[in-house]
Length: 316
Image 1 (cartoon, helix red, strand yellow):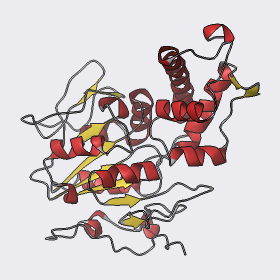
Image 2: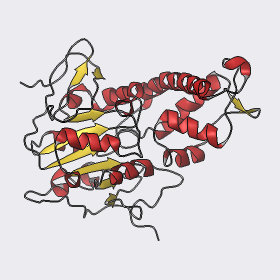
Image 3: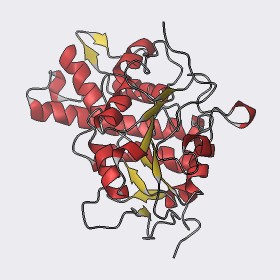
Image 4: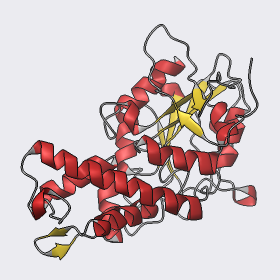
């Protein structure tokens, strides 16, 4: 039995990771109820796996603003200077480290741990336990700010929901979302932008909290492949960053990169991407569509097709 939509307006994601011997489809759990997945996928030929931040929604700038709001809320300083992540620096950070807490730990480890009056009597954190306490508090406050920002400003990037709907409606294509984001922020994005009805029809949905190692580690994609019971070569990933590309390639999955407009877009094709979209155009909608699901997975084909028009040109 399937359901066309959840009765409640928001979906809380249950633990996603399944191991051998369990059902291929995962379950999306709305608050106050448990329902089986409404996916219509049967014996899929291929799978299409979307990252969330930067792919579904151009969220990197929203994340940056939320981090800075969290730093400012606690009055954090490094060597007497207020802690602020610039647009240019966050572009680099987003293509270097996956996940919010790892980003902060990387930054503080490369520079210096910050101080604030609300933590440890204004002293630098002493040891790993105190460092984790600080990062946890910053992440919690950042998530509060992020939810507010998403609710007021987040919209889907061009072509994402179109391609997602095409995959959901094709019983031969499994579809899912695999994000490095923490579950609280991830749920806010997918509920606001993707919507509970689409989520109920997904074959696999995982957030960063569902795995012990975040991107660029390939674990999340390897686990998705196990759930879907498909070889890696038939699972196409859509990512936006170098971190995501490395996770996909580490799982031996072909990857389409749809980078966000940025001050420094890497040469993803040279790094192994199967296709790279223009950073302004994305996947495209309407007359500006770059490719459809049937072009990506031609009828009767054993391998995906990545020869599209309208893609980004290779860097010289």
